[in-house]
Image (cartoon, rainbow, N blue to C red; front, side):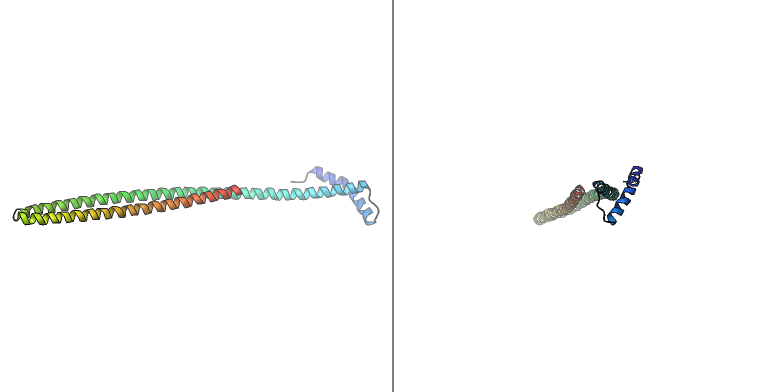
Length: 192
């Protein structure tokens, strides 16, 4: 707090009395109760001025802390926006990857279907010359091809599920870490 005119006037009013008391004290004369009260008043005034200075320092420190907290809030907002953008980008990328994989699977299945269809027609043409022997071989080949296709499809599904699960686990861990960070940060902010 700043000194006021009243404070200065008070000191000026008791200054002559203080000088008189100092002379008495240095000449080792006894002090009256009035002298002691005047000294106490000056001492209390000095103490109050010291406390005012400390209060000013504390107020300035609090202002600095408020400024720092504003900067922390801005940084937190920036990180929150960045995390939201990163999560959106990741979601978009995963959606795009899933769509690409679905399109590729559809194309591969169509191509496989066309190849199987062509092979089946070729086999049907050959069947006209030697129906019995080719029928047994075709039946075996068809069963083997179906088994292999089933196994390949199952393997592809398992790999796809594994890839999706890994991506989900990674996103979940990232989300847990971010939530933990925000909770820790909010607890730290609450403590201050």
